[in-house]
Image 1: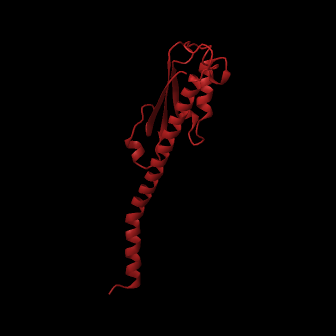
Image 2: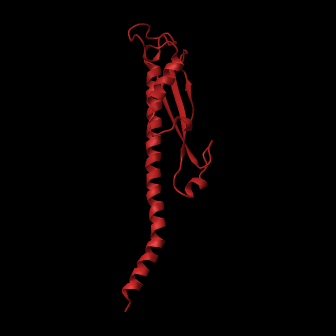
Image 3: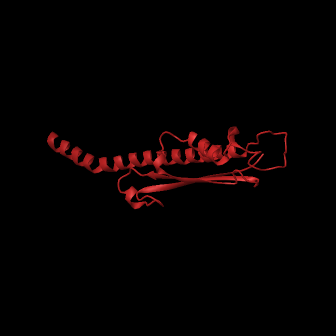
Length: 154
């Protein structure tokens, strides 16, 4: 029969073995949630920016003409700057602006009928050892998340 002191020692040893694994799993779950949130936010930013670039100023005038005079986001003069402003206005407060790679806007302010917005974000991983195993494209210890949106002009 074990003494009460022996059972306490066994519990401490078991906790010392299981606690690091438990903490590792909990931090991994938090990182996975951050990854999903960052991807959804980045995708939302791209969709909103592409939508802003494809809106026609006057829906009934010159329906078959596609130029920077017919499609400007929210009535702004410079179309690329307007799309840029819409992109950053929809940024999640949990995502640092310094971790973004510059977004690419194609088809904005020209005669093409399609607008495409591409963006990427470097998410730093908090999980111990997992961050050092993963290497982002531009930042070690980070995952690079990509998102894009393509829309036809109105």
